[in-house]
Image (cartoon, rainbow, N blue to C red):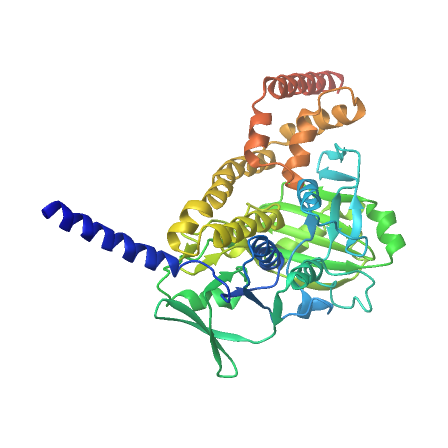
Length: 465
């Protein structure tokens, strides 16, 4: 009798658990709100609707974004350098997403690395223009009637083609009532959703609205970057920069990394560093290595901004009925943010459709994709730490330049240094893979040989002088 009673009690608990879990899944008629219509939001919408259709699940998807990517300047800007890595281009193609020629401003053939000791061109290892230079919006201020299509606008179009709707209402708050998220709007209206996917990014005020929610999100660590657009003619930009991204590794205090990216009639300058300010920007733009390849006094600046970037993952970018994707949650350190948006968005969409929208479902099926990125970022911090060593030792910069130049001149050589530089700058490979290549015996052996050769050359020069 006792066993029967206990069995009945367990069955009751199981029934209650099933009822509770059934309310944390998407069903026909479920409503999903996506905050932010950039790559993360559009990728999430695209995959959510694609996967839902595969299992005959009819849901309503609203993308909230106040911007129009058909406008030039701040109204359609997404504060980004605008490079899509070759690995992401291939992944998108495998998903049936082929970037049209109207989106790609320039196919990138090489990365030209500039140091105070010289320059070297690192060619695309694949031998094809599979790295895309593009605009996230419709181009910078003074872009005029651009013939280029916005990358973010193109992705958003893919999502709306699947059935998502774009809503231009301004969100003023988020409430939690009876276990459901409610969005409040500037017109005093409100709307309840079964799931809210936050893809607003760290530059959005929306993240501050999550402080009072029961989800308990923690804000990510951020730092500022600097993005500046210079305008000339397309022929002049091509003459000055060619089909190369120009990367600068210079011994300028507080400067971590800088690049100049050709895009049609514009060139985008991107800078990363500690406490970026106008003094640091001025120092960089007037450095001899920069002026030698890009005379900024002859090419006027027409647009600039100092956006935040995510430097560290949230401990828990998910909760019941809410998930954070893209750089509002977890993204790659410095590079390939669009690739991280793709991976986190697809993992979140798959979880929502096939596993559920509970915190536990996201923990089991979504968080592993985020955790892989955060672990790889830990290796990335170690790799970028080597730039501090480069700044201190002029001799080491000569060794790196010599090794890369010899590999590019003698294409039969294994491109150890060239591959490392290429993957670090493009974000085409995980930092873990780059680190493994850096500790490969062949890499270390060649580095030692070039170190010795450069030292011998220095001794010979001293004897002659």
